[in-house]
Length: 485
Image (cartoon, rainbow, N blue to C red; front, side, top):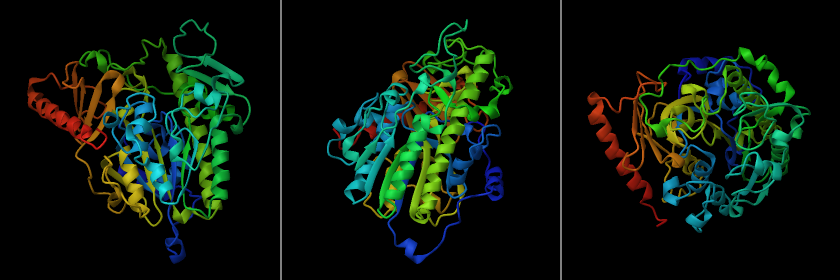
């Protein structure tokens, strides 16, 4: 993850910020209560947009509140770099190539009667609820329709959708992508659109999601619960109420990553992302407006997170609730002239991950971890059986000792590019095709953390590439060696 926040900077931030959440209380009566799980997942969120990860422009005080109580992971990676595979993976407990869910379907046909993450808690007597997008759900189409998408009904005691107007919201809108002459109206689909919307938070999907989550928290505060709260921002379209845009206006003041001529010259064709400044026909003005629209969406989503956190505090259950915040994958904001998701570079494959557990102190972990690790970790923390079949690992020990390194590598895939990533501490290795027939990328993460120089074709690094090719072959065999076949 580029522009990674240092341990010293974050701890200074945590010590200085004015927290509205109280400190943990070590009361015996609280310790006896079952631990709840509040799982908050944003959509298409890069960690570098969060102030607790070092962003100086986009302020996210509510996500920062979780970081001030929890463990912030600087090297957390998704298992699929777009929504469908990533969400099916973390919810089922299996890598995408284990279940074969490489697109936008639900994993149930592949996993059969094996319990999903929330279903495992449901089977243990927990109330389980989904509010908006946990499994894949089309944005904006599925949000406009208020449909279940690729949801799994067996995972939930109850489930709720949060319809919203999305790109049709009244306000001032502009289509930034594929609109060089400015004649295209505001359009739907997976398109870069900014709408400075009229009305308040509750007009939009995420405002409704927060309101429903608040209602459910108070209703079930005396029940053990696993509650998934899925916010759809900052996924395009970048639609938020007008006040959230104010810090990022005028758009011309927003900064873009440094651009380097010939940046793509040393990478294979599949390594050039599916959305670029070139094929989107976005000039500098539109690129800066895209950054401002994205940040406004992040700020709006953060405000909704705050409402949910306030409800946990007001209900008196903060001291027996595990709070997790993450995203389904990262997002490019102009790095390498790339935009959006899908790529296997750090900006797209890395995710923000914060885990707050009652009785644990705030810290920062640089261990490599995967979203797959959340299922076994929360099961362990809540005293439930940890199914041996799961392909993630229990990372709960790092919550007490942030110096632990729990993985040698993180694994992620980009199925639409037939791409595979092994991300170690010192190296990022990407190959396209199971036998690397469509190209290879190798980056020295110590000396080139922003991944500008592909070393894969250098004779001096041939042995390293060969070793990674064998590691990748072994990993793919191991991923598929499960009880689903």
